[in-house]
Length: 184
Image (tube, rainbow, N blue to C red; front, side, top):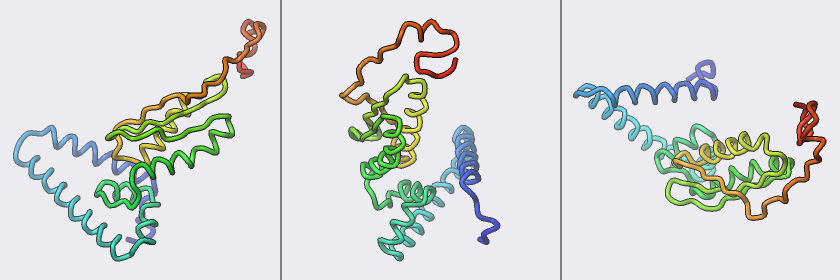
């Protein structure tokens, strides 16, 4: 395929979403035609998985690591049980990548374990919590991207919870600001 026909990340995501929609539609249609179509997709997926395994094996460990480092190929390696890194290592690496940004904001994150298809992550956040939902979602997304075979990411608070913050009374009654110093 020439470079002009290559798909960027958003185009890949759109196609994957469309494939999911079409497969869901096929699964909802009774009859031998839809069953045959699903069987064809499964067989094609198995053949492409075998082809990917052969490419990985022919290239050796360096190529396997390069393939695993690409987001799309890494997901395909996981799908076909070919990824060189175990799930716990991939999750830990994803959290390591988030840690510097969290530490800048006074927080931290660490893996707490994986049980079946559920990863548990300890998350410590400081501050007034106005953006904690966004941080929690970013952690979930990063873990699920590293381990697409996971079905859930549970967040548990770190054992060293911060002391309650003192909020001056005038900060609560002042209409022009909030307790966190962010304009209302």
